[in-house]
Amino acid sequence: MRPSRAQQLLVTTLGVLVAAYILAPFAWVAVSSIQPEKELFSVPPHWVPRILTGDNYRFIFTGKFPAGYTETGLLRGRISEKARDALPALKNSTIVALTVAAANLVLGVVAAYSFSRLRFRGAGALYTFVLASRLLPPMALAIPYYLIVARLGLLDRYGALILIHSAVTLPFTVWFLAVYFRRVPPDMEEAALVDGCTRLQVLVRIVAPVAAPALAAAAAFAFMFSYNDFPFALFVTSTIRSQTIPVIVSATAVNPDVSFGVVAVTVVLTMLPPVAFALLFRHYITRGLITVVTTR
Image (tube, rainbow, N blue to C red):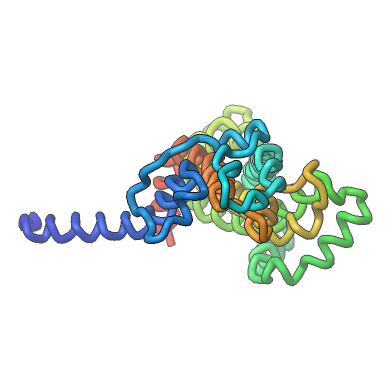
């Protein structure tokens, strides 16, 4: 039955309200990043900005202080030099998150395919152990993880974050992909095996292309967890050589001399890689999640 015009209008209105509720904080941050500090502290506040400037972004990229801070009566100390580390931290976060996503695709695909197609001794117990490890709160293992990476000499290096994030995300990836692989008909795989392909060749040439939506969804989950992680990044990093963007944003925001415009710039920069990743793979991610949900 086709919905009436009133029902369509109601659904559209609700959708617009939900979208506005979700996007309003992001819009406020984006607008704040291009306003001078004086405008942000105006009383009463200006909901529609009257003065726009790129000085806050210029400070992040060049280190040049915003012109507004030279005005009489403004607190010239209201700035945070830590915000200058936002760009290298953004690079660190992107490198670590992409590496974790790649590790999940390589290791998770092989493990999930083995559990879904092969029969070997202890498979059930091992699969249960992998799933049970995901039930533990990640922070419950923070101290063991720290001791392990310290013994390996990986503190304040990319390797520490990559190992920890991979260990936390792989159980979900294995479960997620195993459910998807069980839905893929094995006929083409069996034909390829008869023609002389190995299991690895079957996985790479036949199963992986068919499961591309699920692979994109699993990679997105691993990428977002790694990119947004704060506690582990705070524990095992100490310098900008490996500190990630959540650590820098936190250090900038808690500074009593912080500029709110500069904090807004760091938040805007933080959003760029996840948004780009989501836009690039949005169709695959949506199809993968829908297919797995419908198989349960």
